[in-house]
Length: 493
Image (cartoon, rainbow, N blue to C red; front, side):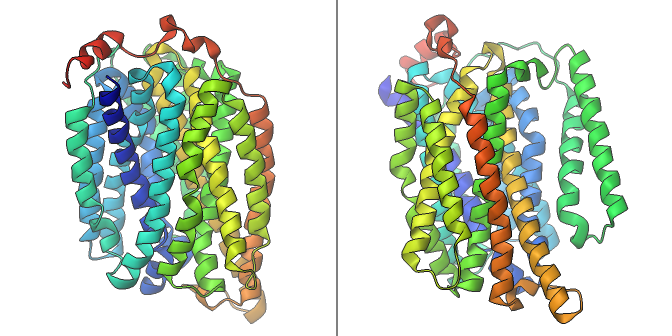
C-alpha cells in the first residue's frame, strides 16, 4: 500500500514539476524575448499574464467539475491539454499565435492545478498530508528553479521556441503515469447540475479585474476606460455572489468563507504568492540589466539558492503533521521579511554571495509557507467540497501569482518610464528598460521591494490568527473515499 501511495506522490509531483518548470523556463526568457521583439516589459509580460488569467478564470470551474465527475479525469485531461499547448507554443511563428496557444496552456494548467490538493485530500490519510504537501512544494519550487537554470542556457544557445518544445516529452510521460497510477475515486455529487452561469460570471469578473493592470500601455486605454472596466468587474462580482447564494448547486459554496481560518489563510496565501512571485519575476531583469550577466548565468544564480527547498519543503510538512501548521507559517513570514529587506539593498556593487543569501532566505520562506498554508486550508474543508476548496485555494494562490507579476512590473516600469521621461523630456517607448541608467533601474527595483516588505508584514499578521482544524484528523472526518482506497490496495485500477 505504501509503495502505491509513493507512486501517486511521484505522479502528482511530476505534474506539478511540469507546470512549474515551464513557468520558470518562460520567465527567465522574457528579457531575451523583449529585446528580440523590441517590446517593453509590459508587452512581453503578456506571455505570462494571459496564461495565468486563463488559469485563474477556470480553476473554480474545473474544481467543481472534479467534484462531479472525478478528480483523475480532470487531472489527466489537464496534463494532456497543457502538453499540447506547449507544443503549439513552440512552433508558433508570431507573437499573436504564441499568446493564443498560451491561453490553451492556461486551460490545461487550471485542470491540472485544481486537482492536486483535492487528490491529496481524498487519497492520503490525514497524518500524511502535511508531508505530501511538503513534497509537492519541493517539486514545484525545484521545477521553477531548474526552469530558470535550464531556460537561460536554452534561450542562449537554442532559441526561445525550445523553452516550450522541451517540456513536451515530460508532459507525455506525466500523462502516462497519471493514467496508470492514479486511482479512480467515487464522487459524492454524481447527479449534480453544473453551474454554467456562475462559471461565466466568475471568469468574466476575474478577466475584467486583471485586464486594466496590464493593458493601459499595450492597448492605449485611458483612465476613463480603465475605471469603466473596474466598475464592470465589480458589477459582475456582485452578480456572481447573488447568483451563487440563490443557486441550489453553486459553483462556489460561499458559506465556506464564513470559516475565518479559511478566509485568513487564503488571504495570507494570496499575498505571500504575490510577494514571492513579484520578486522572482524582477530578478532576471536585475541580474541582466544591472549586473550585466548573460541569461544562462542569471538562471543559474536563481537556481542554486532555490535548492534549499529540497530540505525545507518536507521539513515544513513534518512540522505541520507533528506540531501544527502555525509554527512553520510564522517562521516563513519572518524569513520572507528578511529576504525582501536584503533584496531591497541590492545594487550594482554587491557580491554574488549577497545575492545568493537573499535568494536562499527567500526560498526558505517559500518552502516553509506553502505546505503549511495548504494543510491549514484543506483541514477546514467540508467533506463533499474538497475539489471546490482545493480550487479556491489555488485561485487565491494563482491570483496572487498574476497580481505579483502585474503589480511589481507596474511599479518597476512606471518608475523607470517616468524618470526617463523627466530626464530626456519625451515619453519612453519600446524596450526602454535596456537603455535606462543604472540609478533609474535601481529606483524601480527598490520601489517594488518596499511594497514587498509592507505586504510581508501583513502576511505575518494574518498568519498569527490562523490555526489548523484538529478534528479533521479523526477517522470519521477522513475526507477520502475509504472504500475506493481499500480496493486500491489490491491493485491499480
